[in-house]
Image (tube, rainbow, N blue to C red; front, side, top):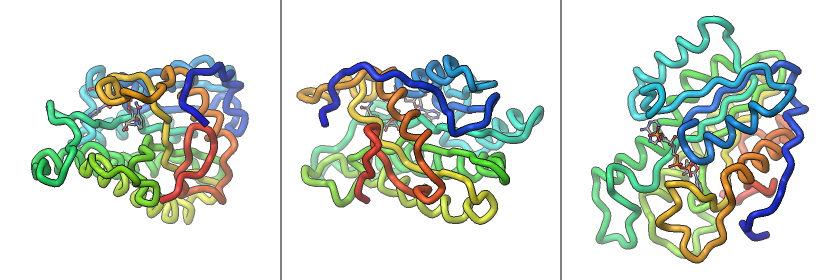
Length: 244
Ligand SMILES: NC(=O)c1ccc[n+]([C@@H]2O[C@H](COP(=O)([O-])OP(=O)(O)OC[C@H]3O[C@@H](n4cnc5c(N)ncnc54)[C@H](OP(=O)(O)O)[C@@H]3O)[C@@H](O)[C@H]2O)c1
């Protein structure tokens, strides 16, 4: 399977109730924006709410910002059927991914963990109580295949890779706890493919990259098919399970 552009029609989240409520965090991003737009075109979706740093001042590296957003968005109605965390960073504060061990810088590595692992963990902390208990609810965070330990053949990018690997463990651990109170929940990490966004622009070099709308449609189609038995897993845009 290549990441080359192709036409995929998103036929809607048929696994969620009519009039379902969705939240896209990181909707100012390439993939996050496409996820929100695609959901808004879904006839079954009642409400698509969004959060972003540039739009709302939502900063995933500050817990108070996440807690305040959860409190504000749950004021009218307290559950979300679908929460998508599409934030993330590869170049953060001007520091791109390292090519070698000698390039490791503690501050840059700590920021990678703050944005790509601790941030989504705090989103789980503050938003998982807003998942439905008696019916299906989906939480998905955008991870990356390069966070797979088993799939790591090239090395490099040690901070981004290890932060995404930590995110995968956070998702797996959270899924087990959330299933105790929300047995129909689906909590997963997703690999969106190589996608044409700001994040990938300087790095996708030789790889064919998908338009964000293509990735979004495929990711939502995958989420629609996942069962609670698959909660805690790591899935690519084509529906395949990614090894840990
Ligand atoms: N593009 C790819 O090829 C690719 C491949 C594998 C995985 N991914 C993953 O997919 C996710 C989305 O990436 P993308 O390609 O859509 O990148 P993007 O266009 O650069 O979007 C990144 C998003 O993250 C948000 N963000 C970054 N730092 C934040 C912070 N401290 N607080 C709140 N929001 C913050 C940005 O918000 P603002 O713009 O508002 O600052 C933006 O909404 C990332 O987790 C990335 O690792 C992407």
